[in-house]
Image (tube, rainbow, N blue to C red; front, side):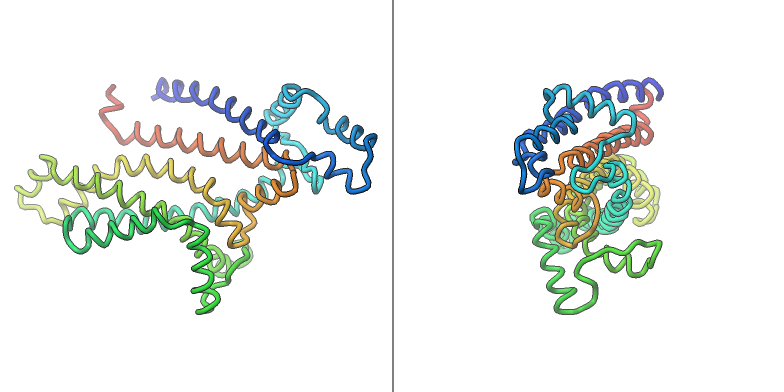
Length: 314
């Protein structure tokens, strides 16, 4: 186990270094000049030069990168050029919002996708199988922003059941917090549920054809026990590892959804920062998101190692 973790951690370090270089290089692709934005409309060359010198923007790109990554390693992501607040404070303020939204979306995806996959495999070539596959295909094909807009028009505007936008912390009012996050969580979890359904169905079909399932049926065990205790337990092995990867994908997929529903999380923070050319905020948010994704990949490997006895023996 320790040797396995050491190998995975050794591979993560160069990955994060490359990711940090790519994240820092994003500022070269963004249009505009942050010094011009800070100087305002009545700017002159002297003020622009002073601003660039103050923020180190006149230094070579590798010098700027080394200064930035050195601060990141010490917990200093820089200061927002637009509002003058430390980037780390902004990230920590928005992180609970995205974590709540992503956690709810992941829970919805599990509650919908896994039962649908089991039902589709058990009732293969039946109406339920075709219906589950059609729903999964719809989930994979529907853009998040379109589904979000349609839900707002139907649920909020036409029926008036839920608020169309905004966010309330669960520590302030958990009922209102649930009302403001259930629709965006469903939008985010929709495509993940479709992925869970397809993988659960494939794993269940493979498990139901194994010898141990036929032996369990030959012993006279009920079909419910055979499915839940024998087939499903083994079929969930690849689904568990897939879940850790999809949990990381939720963070990157929350950008458009948070913008549509005006959720003040990571997605809205990075979009506002891009429009305002606030490079340090963009770099901080993207680096944290990429690191989280790499961390979830590590959790997936650890989960697969723990639940797969053959890998532990090797």
